Length: 107
Figure (cartoon, rainbow, N blue to C red):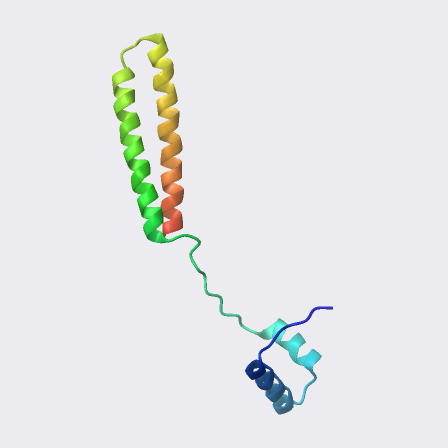
């Protein structure tokens, strides 16, 4: 069995509705469950300014990785492997930034 908590004012409103409609508590709740329209307010999980700052930092990191990748793009086998890792890092950062933009409501 489940219970709901109501403050004094809510309880008075509830009881008033029951009396006005002439229904039992159970019938009222059953009808409310099947016919009520619920208003939901969505609260952001994170501050949009914080997400914007993180996205900006990701952009700066991406820029630094691009500079490193440009320097490594000389054809040396060891540098080619590092270049590949830089490209993977850039792809990861791009995905992170896209997700942050979605969370901030920019996408």
